[in-house]
Length: 225
Image (cartoon, rainbow, N blue to C red; front, side):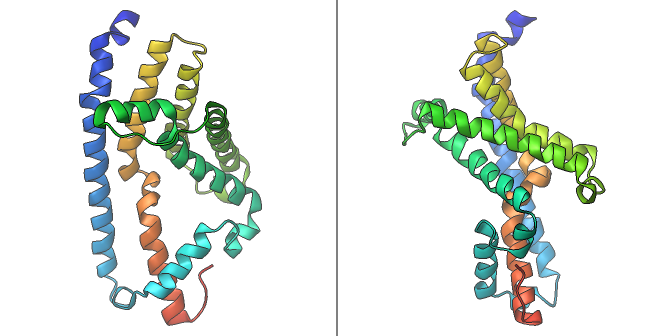
């Protein structure tokens, strides 16, 4: 069984056809999600016709700056972990040297890579943030009330590629080839999960903030932050 899982055919499938499947599902699913949200927004006869770039960008700025909104200031620990988590989950995969090597071999392009120790720190930080999110859902009553099993699953889906990548790179607890293939598969599963789970907020954030910012600015003459 181990020989089959770690065989060159399975590895080639994961770094070949499976990569294309993951990207196609991600792109098509994301496009469907965004288009669906835009169609839904158009049905709002009150706010959509009066969307304001001014108030939309004002909302973007205050919600993208750490502690820029009142809600962030009311929950400083959540704000701290949320921001370093999002920085880590975006920056680490893009600027990780082994990932850049793959892009260079496939497409002939490359860019600056994170130093190994910095990449390790950022990877561990993402994992620790996921642990914090789990404990928050367990012990914070206002969050536990709206938490379901799928929320824990999503956290696991995000943490798993980082944990398996760290273990594979440092060759810990399992043979390198096996852990590498697990890491590749988990990364592809996370990519495919984005459009169909709460991870899709990477798209819906912008539409929601534009909608809410315009509503508060144009109609309520107040801030949404």
